[in-house]
Structures are given as structure tokens and as C-alpha cells.
Amino acid sequence: APHRLPNFCAGPAAIPTPVLMRAQEELLDWQGRGLSVMEMSHRSKDYIAITQKAETQLRSLMEIPDNYKVLFLQGGASLQFSAIPLNLLNGGRADYLTTGAWSGKAIKEAQRYAALGLGEINLVATGKESNFTDVPAQSEWNISDDASYFHYCANETIHGLQIFEPPQVDAPIIVDMSSCILSQPIDVSKFGMIYAGAQKNIGPAGLVIVIIREDLLGQASEWCPMLLNYEHQVDKESMSNTPATYSWYLAGLVFDWLEEQGGIAAIGKINQQKAALLYDTIDNSTFYNNPVAPKHRSIMNVPFTLAYSNLDKVFLEESEKAGLLNLKGHRDVGGMRASIYNAVPLEWVQLLVDFMKDFEKKYA
Ligand code: PMP
Image (cartoon, rainbow, N blue to C red):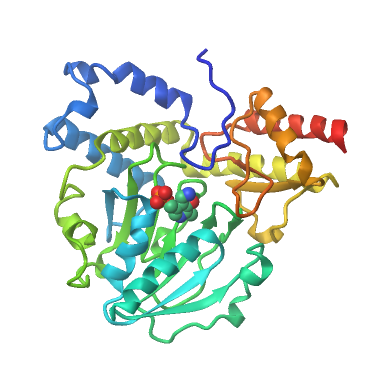
């Protein structure tokens, strides 16, 4: 078997080994054509077939209704922070919920367009007072009557805070699902638009997926760059310019793998088991701590601190020596973080939990 260590990186994250092996097999000679996918014209019949297969698979995995368009774009999830107001603000008012670092960046970017006079940005509520360990109750939100859209982040990758059900609001909901897309079944029809950077649950970096309801197209500001204009990208089938061809192909291989796992419902059950194993270990110890309100604990990113922060360095050194990669927490929250995306099997989480218990015995 290839040398593959348990990798808990928040992103770019682990990719299933069988996917990488298949990419390796096909690297030099894709299906007997004598060239690699990364050397193909994005206008070629073969490459178009690769992209269509990926879209069909994503539609079926997520049960995306027909009145939604699917785009495979570039610029990461961060460029969507700009694309969203440029396409959807349309002189109106948009509601933003802040629940951590990423939704915080999204509103900050949107506010730049409000400053240009493209519309108004309204902060509905922020979890800042709780250090983003909880979400303010919806009864306390300052929701606009007439919002063009409502934006939130379903899974705050840094704070490990997840919102499992979309809020009950009238405006079209725009959601950042970068770190939780494809991790459990969702009802796409509850959203106006879903977007996600690829480098966690979809494939390699360089790709961002946008799933947008058709009625939201066609309202872009005249200032919207062509490449960020959703309607334009729909017309051009995500190929207004050269797309991230190899990442798109790899995403398709990840979708093959997801189908082999039994789809999102099946992978969702495993994700629940992985998260439960890790949170139980943390909760059953006085040495480890996770501060997030239980109903908002992320099933993808699990931050935790040690009883003594001067042990952080030791924990990281020893875990790395034990072959457990990338457990360092984000500098904003400190401590550790284990990202347990789809490609992280239960066995890796078991290895982590065993290591944590041994470490606690040694140092507590
Ligand atoms: N949103 C979330 C929830 C994220 O986790 C990240 C990346 N970690 C981003 C947005 C930004 O993604 P990108 O680096 O692809 O711009």
C-alpha cells in the first residue's frame, strides 16, 4: 500500500487514496488518448465530456433541482464574497449573519460595494460576544423586510461552528458551504445559492462550485467583472476563460468515489460517527476542551484545547512523530484542530483518539 498518513488538514485537505491512484493511472495517458487531462484543450470533446460527467454526478449526489445552474469557477470561495454583492445586491439591501471568521470576511467584502453605492449591507447578528462559540437566537436578529438576499456560512472552518438547518427567512438564502458541502444530505431547494471552495470535500484547490437558482440570474451590477457574472458564466458553461481543468477532472473522480461509498447519506452516517467519537473523547476528559455550543458543533472541523497551553508544542511534536499530520489549530483560536472531512476514514479518527488518550495519561 502507498505511504499515506492520517491528514487532518483544514484545507487543502486529504483526498481519498483511490482517487489519487486513479489520477496516477490516468496521468500520462487518459483513456488511451495519449495525453494527460491537464494537456487537453478545454474545448475538446473529451474534456467537455469530463465536465458534463462531473456536473451530472454532482446534481445526482446533491439532488439539485432542475431550476438550479451549476458553475465550476475559479478564485476560491473568497472571490465569491465579491461576486455575491456584485451579482445580487442590485441597489437593494442584503442581510448578513456573522458566526465566525469566514462569514466575517464575507460581510467585510460586501461592505466595500455598499461603500461604492451599490446597495446596503445589514449585519443581522454576530456571535462575537460568545467568541463565536454560539449563534445568537433568531428572535434577536435584526432582519430586513425586503432583503435582496440573506448570507451566512454553514460551517465556520476555523471556529468549528456549524449551522445545520438554514434559517427561516424570506429572502433568498446564499450560503457558504466550503467546508461542509457533500458531508451530509441537504435540501438544495431551501437555498438561493450554495457555493464552496473545492479544497476540502470536492478535490484540489483552484476550483469553486456555485449552485444558483435561475431566478437570481440577470441582476448583476454594470460594475461586475465579466468573469464574476453568474449569468455570463451560465451562458459560457463555466468556460468564459480557461477553467481549472485538472481540478475539475479530479472533482469528477471524487464524485465517482462518493458514489462508490453509497452517496451522501452513507458518507453522512460515517461523518456522524467520526464526529461523535472525537467529541466524546473530548467531553469525557478534563484535559481536552471544545468550547462550541453542542447543537452547533461542526462535524467537519473539531477545534480543541489542552488543559495547559504550554503543552501545545509537545502535542504537535508528538502527534507528528506518531504520523498524525496537520493538527495545529488556527492562530485565531489557538490549540488544535482536527478536520475530518469525507476523505478522512473512521480509522484515522480512531488513531487520533488513541493518541489523545495516551497523551493525556502521560501529561495530565
Ligand atoms: N469559506 C470557508 C468556510 C472556508 O473554510 C474558506 C477557506 N478555508 C473560505 C471561505 C475561503 O476559501 P478560498 O481559500 O478558496 O478562497
